[in-house]
Length: 352
Image 1 (cartoon, one colour):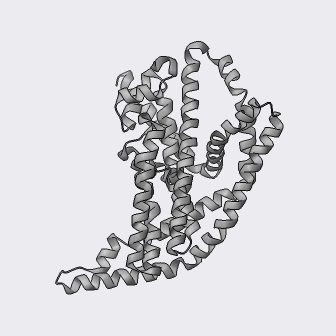
Image 2 (image 1 turned 180 degrees about the vertical axis):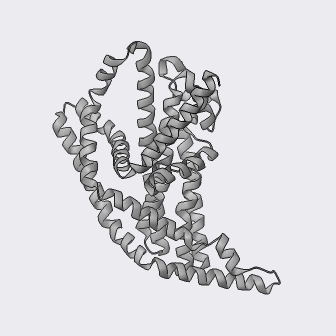
Image 3 (image 1 turned 45 degrees about the horizontal axis):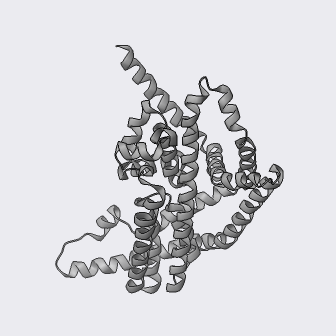
């Protein structure tokens, strides 16, 4: 066996060991990942306050206070909805099964031979509502570690201002290597900030539309739309499904259709018009990679891993794009050609 095959086997074995370790350590890693992504999002406001000559301690206090206030408001508004929805979930699932059975009975009268039990074994629409409940409950379980998450964010932000100097000190050729690290950090911050703003707008519009239609737990479905908007293509469908099914149970087929149309319009505008213009061509993932990352990170980290799947994969892609020797992997992960990736993601002085 030559050295190349040996290296491949060693790399695969190391990958399996690392993934197994991450899955075992998920209760510790997941809060740290959430802290890291929140810190990336709130770092620009902190740096802006520092540039305005606000003392670091005061700027950090302002940022952390804003995070706590937002978290408390969201928890207060949505927490009761999650509890009430989870309590009523068996009733909704049973009502949905009854309605689906009634529709299948009408189809059966036309002469088509359909086994209801067999069909429900393959496709059970009530599972969509159960999945939404598990995802929100899993996220709520992580957010109970709010004290740990808050302190981790504080320490990450304290280190953020000195990290570039430390990085220059450890690099052998900082003038050559630092632009790649700087490009990587800037693109991750840009992606997370833009994606968060677009997801927030999507969640707010969804919640308002459902409130107008009178669908129960509108704030809850708005939160779910905000969270799942981090998952392109698949996320909008997963967010819409439980809300449409609940509208069908509660208000009938016409309102369910209006809910579905509202989701479709909102996600077309946000995902196909606003997001590509703001983000640029090189910050996309192929649909296959999105689906695989959703399954993989969900298996490793649970429901929160599903929500973080695309940000994690995007971070990996941007890191790979930052170096010429790994750029081909980023091209395979992306939805665009290598030329567009080069234009969007290389450091400014080199893309010019």
